[in-house]
Image (cartoon, rainbow, N blue to C red; front, side, top):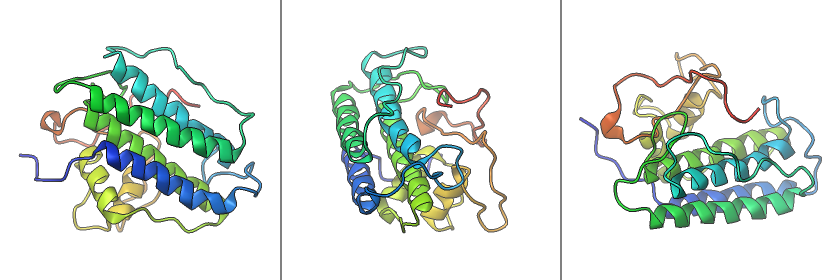
Length: 214
């Protein structure tokens, strides 16, 4: 039985995009070629990835895709960080609008499973929050998203995560960013439960193929 929880909403996605903007604007004139935390990507590349992911989700959901579609955006390295923050907000709004328009029961392809609109919203929020954190760490900035938002995303995407831990620490653990107490840091095959929670099989999801974004 799935525990009671608050759903992830389109407003949450817009909030995540605003939080990203507010957290990273203080570093807008810094060197964005530095690594984003301990990722192989630079801060610039990591930020450029966010619109890719958000538009990919919107593309798949809007077309009710049953398999991977050709990307509608595949990076724009000539954009400035300020422009990329603006594009991130715009693509978050596009995905939010697509989820609002999706009829009940709509499903669409994601490599982690046939996601419902809430699944896409939660993945969008998690992409924004975890990569904002990656960039903030690379820039030496403090970042901690609102606990209520984090908790909603955590419970939707990572139902196997511990419920007695700090929610943001649990998201970072579930996203392969850090250890959590006596739980070791996960490797790169961590994944999401993006299909409805009613379909979760009770196991920790693992990636079985390389990510699309390299």
